[in-house]
Length: 590
Image 1 (cartoon, rainbow, N blue to C red):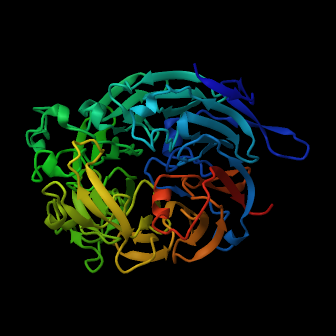
Image 2 (image 1 turned 135 degrees about the horizontal axis):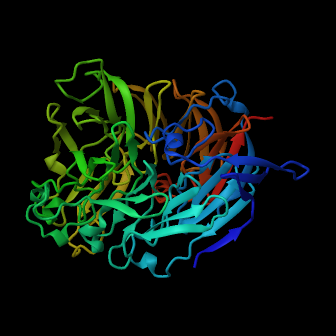
Image 3 (image 1 turned 120 degrees about the vertical axis):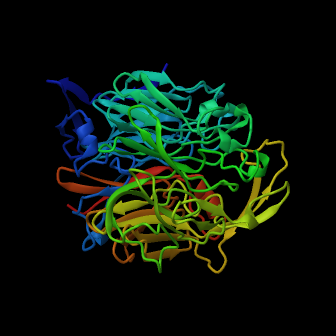
């Protein structure tokens, strides 16, 4: 049984859905909005007014071309509506906005349809979850729900109890659901929702160590019916390519190579790009030896969208410190001209200025920017941002990474000082890319940790303990860094005491983002200057978005607790935000 609270607002007319949404006028009058079913063509080139997926577009940019709000008038932004998000748990949701309606993911598989102009609730879906489901999952993130997908007239999500399911966009009624894994046998956290590629629901997950290797899968389902089309494992079986990289570790003891953030998709190449996590345990001397690379952990995988087969992979790090690499992959077509004075590692075969289709960004917690050819996976260039000491070298010709042997664990009880901490550097909080400036904007943290390898019988997730602290030489934990996608040069850096959170960038020359101290602000995308700021009271733990309805542009910030928000707050104890879960929507005055 699935509980829902429904306020009828929709009806089917001539094959389309018509939304009668309250617009918040004094008369309480309703106006009709025609719902246009979402196609692959729409998802590949969405209307500027909409934000129809996690990073708005399949290339992962987090960019909106809207420019009504710009650098000249952003200081006039005013709150137009807000709404409490009452589902308990970590609030890390991304509003999906399409056709004047906001679809909001909440923890514990609560999904709300909200009038994007007035903030009025249209319908609410509450999934009835087994009482024991979180006993099998990773505590803290068990109920997290970062994003939704939309296709035709369906809102699609993955659930805490390891289903993928679809709701009727008009009513919130359950249309179909498909079990992916049995949570009692193969527990896997589905903390991020899917994307849609060629009518397929593409999703990843974080597989618990107790689940074994068969839970570490990326899956594709038919968006219309929920039928499973393929699944791709991230841990090779005996005899498969990559098996030899596990050093003879029995298959059933190969664990926890997860894909817990949403992928990107290139429809021209028909390739899905997704990143993977660390193993469990993390120190490799416990897992067959530090000389083994344990594929496909901490890698970028390029998958054939039709079959799920791995077309190419690139491993970013042989990870002993829980420095996952599952974050957003930015798909950019750009001239590639890395500046040797600003970029540490460059492919010597690269012809400066040549045009390439690249996958770029900061895919992992190390804070290192990697730029790869997205057709072949060829390494092009990489460079650090925040302080790091886990990678000592990357071979420019091959892309092979060499870890710093001084911080690689070799025995139980050993303590090392690592930069960054296992919270990053960078973490799940997303960066953004603007084609206006050919620049990526990244929320980063100046943090390190004293880590020790634990002889705990592998009872803990990673067999690590850590004490986090600020990086040497600074008291500024949070930073936003603007990095040229062409040259790798840092264009500007903004720093502050509080840890920074997710970003969105706009055609109006603005970078919107918040921090764990409740500040939400707009930065100039060319200089990093703060142009507007407001105190929302609680950590800005959601992903900011912008949209337009009837010619008026809106900007959304979500607050709550976000896991990292509380951890980073402990490093800046004088900052004491509250922990209210809300969404706040801003616009220019009428």
